[in-house]
Amino acid sequence: MKIIYICLGILSLVLGMLGIILPILPTTPFLLLSAFLFSKSSSRLHEWLIQTTLYKKYIHELVVSKQITREKRNRSLMSVSFIFMISMIITPIWIGKLCLLLVMCIHHYIMLTKVRVIDEE
Image (cartoon, rainbow, N blue to C red; front, side):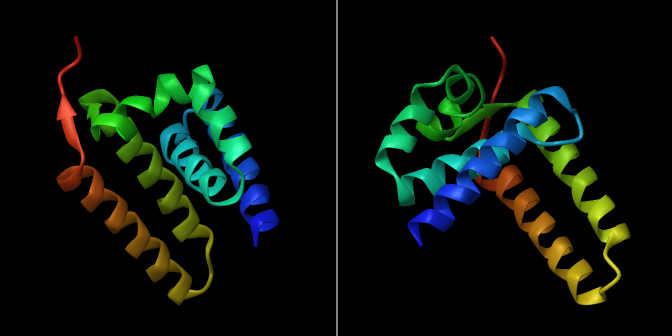
């Protein structure tokens, strides 16, 4: 199971890094997923990830204080919504569309109710 977590963590990290360049990919959720997957599979990879500038710039404040800036939250909501809507349009199976919609709604619920927003300084 560790090897699966490591592979998924690397894939998520690559997608997160692509999200820096491509505005349609959300960076923060992919980096959070990478941190979670690495924490479950390899303490060495997890320690490496949390020492990177990428981690410190995009998710450190969220992990430590459970707060993000309004701009980061809105960008996350918009990019995740965009990706999921495209996926729902492309997916031919209605149960797949419902699953995507459910995950998108859960993401919005968590971001809007559980994550505190701080004003930019």
